Amino acid sequence: MCGIVGYLGRKNTKKILLNGLKELEYRGYDSAGIAVLSHGEFSSFKAVGKLVNLEAKTKGFVTNKFAIGIGHTRWATHGKPTELNAHPHAGHNSYVVHNGIIENYAQLKKELLHEGVVFLSQTDSEVIVHQFEKNLQYSTNAFKAFKKTISEIKGAYAILLITKSEDKKIFFAKNGSPMLVGINEENEKYFASSDTPLIGQCSEVNYFEDGDYGYITPNELIIYDKNANKREPHFTKLSTNKLSAQKDGYRFFMEKEIYEQSSVIIDTLLGRLSEDRIIFDELDKNFFDGINEIKLCACGTSYHSALTASYMFERYSKIKTSVEVASEFRYRSPIMSKNMLFVVISQSGETADTLETLKMAKKAGLKTLAICNVDNSSMVRIADTFILTRAGIEKGVASTKAFATQVTVFWMLSLQVAQIKKSLSSKEIQKQIKYLRAIPASVHVEDALHEKIKRLSKRYLNGHGFFFIGRDIFFPLALEGALKLKEISYLHAEGYPSGEMKHGPIALADPELFTIALLPQHLLYEKAKSNVEELSARDSTICAISPLEFDKADDFIQTKEHGHYMLEFFEMMVVVQLLSLEISIRLGNDVDMPRNLAKSVTVE
Ligand code: AGP
View 1 (tube, rainbow, N blue to C red):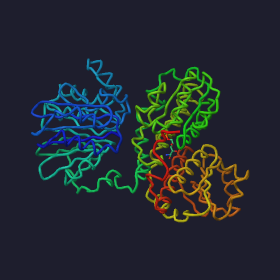
View 2: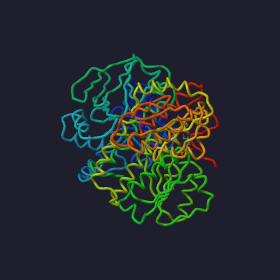
View 3: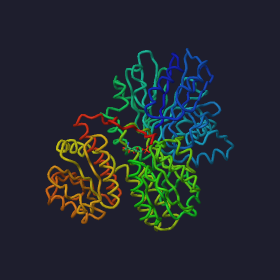
View 4: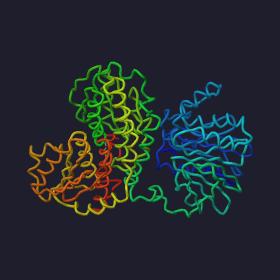
């Protein structure tokens, strides 16, 4: 997730912007920059990597008179982390910073290039400043040009723009990406993507709403809403605790990241779906030529999303697919054929075992693809090509939104292969695209559901272990649910295919064995139900998760009825994530940093 700061006032603008960006480091970034306009002159600095690199570049730069300034930490979604791709992006007399994704940037960029505009970066964001300057040529003032520009861009954005033609104004617009403005008694104005940079600087803040746009000057804050009606700011008192601010009021980063799944999956989908087609800019049109087998390789939660993907590649793309645990694959003298696409999946892009398998595949001459959340990570740099999951920084050691965005990418990718190989009709693909668009709603956390899980979690704090069971594509989800619980509650849990119970595991069934049963309505419901009944008949304590009432359960978490089993998958994913969270909290564990674990396992 990118971070944005802005300042208008008479203090040390450079220092205020850099300190503000430091407070946004928790959002994760791979490059940063600032631009300051004072007395009609711009000064701009950008650097790749950590903020200390940017600070070094601004050493000799001092601002201690009235100025306006904007700053940005970039989490790459379009274009690699380089100085040219870092924000702020420059026009002739303006600079812009942007957080979000401009869905129609390609069309806008094509028109601007046709008109002779020179682009310096590969980003979607740069179109904003050039479109603004194009409009400025035909507008009577900068605000009209800015307003027209905002009406022309589509997608998610939080934007700050400054221009020489109005050097006491900061223009802003917000839609889908967070941003707020703060004021204080010294008549200073602060902007930021979240409230942490404003704590200690401002006394009151106004959180912008989707569709808000306008400008601020030393004497006024002008806000227009999404219907272009002027509205009064709603200033509220600012919280004072930085850490809780970074968690946006959630108890743990993991809880925040479970709630964020709905919004980050919107980013994952953005620009990749049309009415009837999947579009991955990252893959050229003949990427799958000559490929007749896919090998997926990963560890931990990423291994579970790979297993999930294998069901979709074989069912939709009709392509032979196999899945490997990276630490096993490395030493197994595996057979790899040239027509095999080797795919590594990794949130961090740095997991040692997965990285080594990627090198093995490259050495064997295979085409390689990395599905990663961190641009410029080792796997992104080594693989032939990569797809970013756009989950934003994931701070909880127990992965949640990374898993959700990986599965989202794989659902899209399996449909893209299906459209290339014509293994699904375009009608079926259109239907599934409609379901893809429904994922964000399916992972939205309803208060009632969370309250129910909070309450029933008190019954699952001991016992001699858990079975998480599911059939077909719900088996990898059962594995993921079991891993989540193990990782943060330290209680023993195993994921099993429901059909395996009578091959041994059912010997464990008794009231102290807790079975979390995934019972989707649209996939082998009757078969899965009878497996659960076997356990219930032997007095295992059953927690059933299903849209359909199940009377043999001791606990029942009712999920919504959906049109497709993958939407049931996503909703049940949230349930098992919340269940492990609430059990762990009741046990008093450090949910974000569980014992013995690291966020990225960069050693064997
Ligand atoms: C998941 O909750 C764990 N933190 C762990 O299994 C993780 O998924 C695994 O280490 C792989 O990490 P990666 O996705 O960064 O490669």
